[in-house]
Image 1 (cartoon, rainbow, N blue to C red):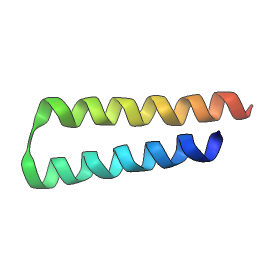
Image 2: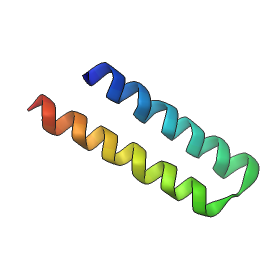
Image 3: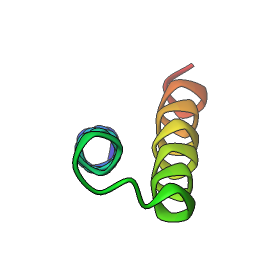
Image 4: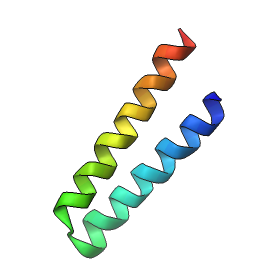
Amino acid sequence: MRSILYIVAVVLIVGWLVGVFAYSATGMIHVLLVLAVIALLLGVIRRA
């Protein structure tokens, strides 16, 4: 389950970076970033 969480977080962060530099769709970019951070935090909390 942890590896899936990390894969999702990485995909969301990459999507956010692409959005920031390519499209400037600010609303969706920040939603992706928040989801990526939440996924990473859940992974860290569940690992502990």
